Image 1 (cartoon, rainbow, N blue to C red):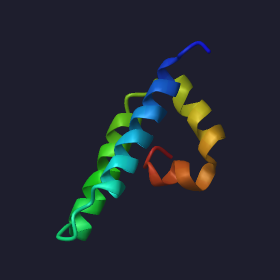
Image 2: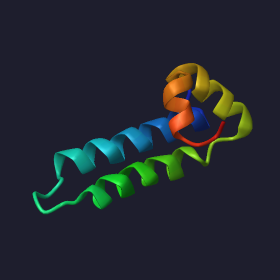
Image 3: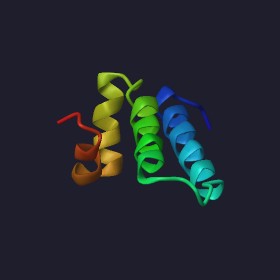
Image 4: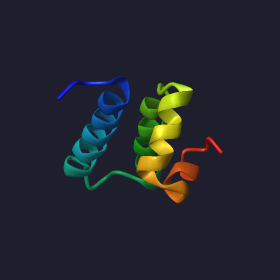
Length: 70
């Protein structure tokens, strides 16, 4: 399967979020949770405008709006 930039960004964002959840210390705060989501948005923010349109189709309007790109 050919790799494209969007696929790699989505994989990186998902991997990082899963690792955060799996290794989240008991002492983690809501700020740590927000930071993990901000990291996800930062990774996905590297997408080109064309890829952002694809992401909107893949993620749906509600989740896409959480990214702050509307």
